[in-house]
Amino acid sequence: MGHPIGRRSVLGAALLAPAACAAPPPAADVPDLAAAAALAGCEAARRGVRLGVHAVATADGRELAHRADERFAHCSIVKVLAAGAVLDRFPIEQLDRRLPVEAADLVAHSPSARAHVGTGMTLREAAEAALRYSDNTAGNLLLRAVGGPEGITAFVRSLGDPVTRSDRWEPALNTAVPGDERDTSTPRALSADVRELVLGSRLDVAARELLRGWMLANTTGDARIRAGAPAGWRVADKTGTGGYGTAGDAAVLWPPQGAPIVLTVLTAGDHPDAQPDEAVFAEVTRIVTTALGPGSGRAG
Image (cartoon, rainbow, N blue to C red; front, side):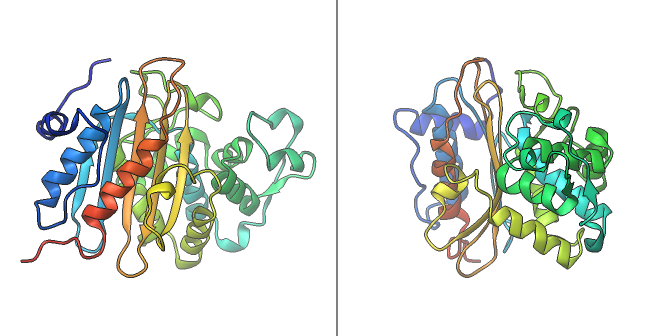
């Protein structure tokens, strides 16, 4: 599976291909170049894995990127966009509106919704189940509430995101066939969306706090970005997993002191039977927090 390789990727592969990726040198040693090389090394050390990364330090706007403008399947990361669309459309007092759940609505991986057949779920319950447990039926309920996949695409366009697209429902959106642009985004676009929803002004304060709380309590991300976060950091994230070894995580990371980092990591394999490589998420996170965390900024 061929991939376009930029100047930094070539440099990173040349420097680091013989070994697994490692944390970059201290900030004084040209952090942008060293960290970019380390990210390229993470990809070079893995056969058949394409890696996309976008990270931004919200304190000063410094960024790290690797294949940040290439498309990857977003899979269930779309649920954070769906929850954001619900919170944008419905006032907090309407989140107790009950949505019907019938046996015919159930799809694979619906640990919460399964218990609500016949009684329904509120918008609040569906959003919590979708974000904390990646419940697929709950995710579809959110999609239905905002006009389906087309409604999600319209919502992200209103955020200023011209890239992300939503085309199908759960679980079909997780096929992640290489070259299929349906249900895809880029690391840079997802980082911008998550930053606006979790840290920005699009949602009112109460809605933003709800979304942040659900993402902080996510149960599906322990082996991904959370696994590489330094001790004492808080992580609010949403994961996605699909075919061809596709895996992703979009997160906001708060250090004990200082402004947060927004980080999106997306991966894709080149074979239908490929399995997600979760170890790369922790490795990338260590590189990013070393390069962009508190105390890493260049003087002057």
